[in-house]
Length: 238
Image 1 (spheres, rainbow, N blue to C red):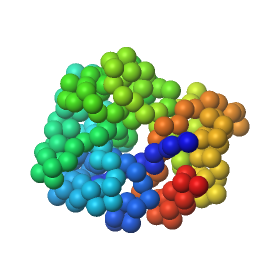
Image 2: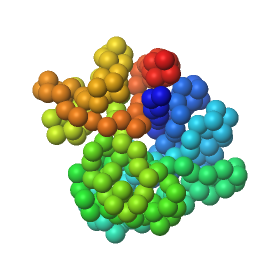
Image 3: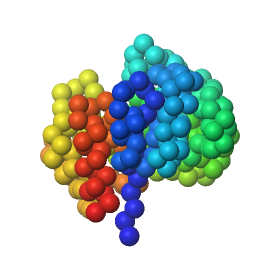
Image 4: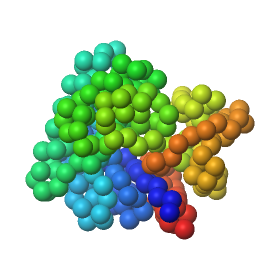
């Protein structure tokens, strides 16, 4: 039986977190550095427990002004500390709720940096392993994020994106470029099914490249996010 995880970034100040919860299986919770605070973390953890959704940390560069989407001059040692601090912030909340963090998924530009920079990827993986070696690390399918974590013995999940377009090298199209996001719901579903059934994705140039799917990300800030989550959840279950 094919099993696939549907994850969504949460606790980022969007109004539809509660509406999305019934349709996802993993939540990546902002830890205060690009969005969120102690109160939103508590509310999101409570929602996860209510709906049986796995609780993950969503650490970022310390960049609330740009929502964690600006490149930052941060070296590997500083990245290690950033991850450690944000995991501790969320763990403080999960302990209050007598539950645990299950996974870690970096956010925004930090996520992109880890995908292509071996040193950044290794720093993130090291910080996660030292914090809790049982945590899973989500990373871009086939990237340094996955290979460096595996090299350290961490459990990983190759992540793909339902509503993002891809380049020929398997990277995501930068948000600064046109057509980075797929807004047509039917095209999103078509891309997800291709990824799962064929193990490939069609890039912006029309090339079909291999991809490994262990968790699928949907974005909660889209115009039709809840409707899309509901449809994808139905498609995956079927």
